[in-house]
Amino acid sequence: MDPLSPTHLPAGIRSRMVPDVNGLTMHVLEAGEAGRPVLLLLHGFPELAFSWRRVMLPLAEAGFHVVAPDQRGYGRTIGWSDAYDTDIRSFAFINLVRDQLALLAALGISQVHSVIGHDFGSPVAAHCALLRPDVFRRLAMMSAPFPGAPALGSSERAPAREIGPALAALPRPRKHYHWYYAQRPANGEMMASAQGLHAFLRAYYHHKSGDWPGNDVHPLTGWTAEELAKLPTYYVMDLGETMPQAVAHEMPSPAQVAACDWLTEAELAVYAGEYGRSGFQGGLNGYRARFIGTNMEIETFAGRQIEVPATFIGGARDWGVQQTPGALRAMETSACANWRGTHLVPGAGHWVQQERPGETVELLRQVLLRD
Image 1 (cartoon, rainbow, N blue to C red):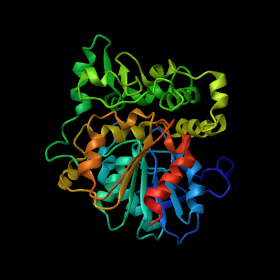
Image 2 (image 1 turned 180 degrees about the vertical axis):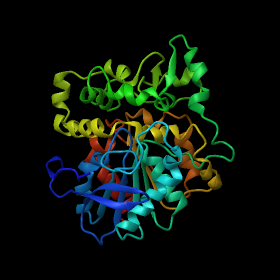
Image 3 (image 1 turned 45 degrees about the vertical axis):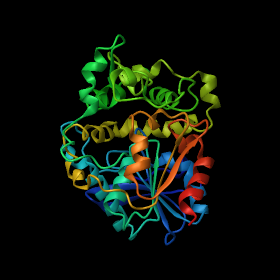
């Protein structure tokens, strides 16, 4: 596998392959000079290291060596299995932390100034700081709150599965997207979407962004079918639909696409090209790990707080902030011992570092990076 072509990247961002990373050859984007304090940026789903392209250079200009890998299961990183029937233990959180430790070792880095994670990368970053605060000295979580390590005996429980019958029994039958993503057909349905991969991803990113008018976010009162049904269909789907069908209803118009300066057609083509080659199953296996007890080792840390300085950044129009009732409050009050505040960017949706890169960088500098 070759590095990402420089033609796809802003000048100043470098792409390379790093071998011998916990069984992987990991694709990494970098900006800034080696030897400076390190920022480790961990992307979410369905994203890539490429998702950080708009913030990497400003962070490097602030004096940092910025490192953004394609995580296990994504992009140009190789050495993982794309089979549905693979051993899911390799996608457990404790092994994803091991991936990052192995990457740092391969790069000759003993400690990072801050680990910053978005979406699925947010709990990965949180576990990095929880398990190895000596290495990951500060933490920024983005778009997905981390309520703390799971309680003892809880890893076999799967709330998104258990709520399924109640969601299906609603007058408008629904299903939780975590459970959809854990099922065998999901990867094939997304890869073979009727509208094509490029259009599917355009609709998906638009639907979860601040551009979609329906993203008027408010807290939910509890984990009940009636409350979860208030979420948009990219989180709580109509029972009979695939994810491509769910987001197709909100496909932006050609004029809206042309006006989307935070995700141009050329940038979207990078995502479509990468997922067209790798598929989605690697990322989906991270969701599957929630359902089969593969994260039980993390229960060892139940009740332990994240001790390093920590903050949360999200979009004010991002339902991801509120999709799990109580998670935001638990993160703010019990999961973190040195809390630097919750910061919601006006107008931004789920893809905050892409939609509002300037505000995101400024918040990181003010809250986490300047002292």
